[in-house]
Length: 76
Ligand SMILES: [Zn+2]
Image 1 (cartoon, rainbow, N blue to C red):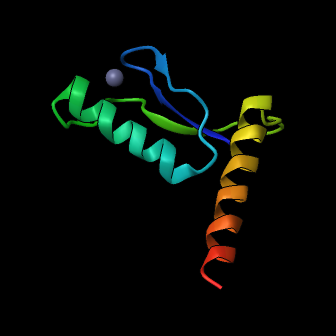
Image 2 (cartoon, rainbow, N blue to C red):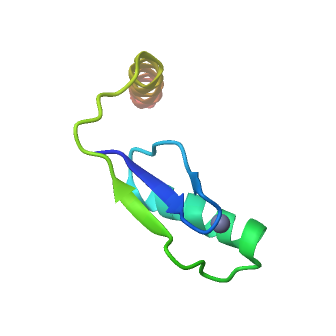
């Protein structure tokens, strides 16, 4: 369920994030960087239904899972 941050005032849209908190964090950073911490009119977090993960996202997820499993197995 990907999300993206949209700032209507700047006319910019963030890349897709897999979680809403990650898109919120992008918005927070944008607010501080471009608007001195103020909330621009029309900003929003958009849900992008029907998005399929890219090949790079799938590979990154598989690598992260492999590292996690390796870390768990090495503790046994
Ligand atoms: Zn902006």
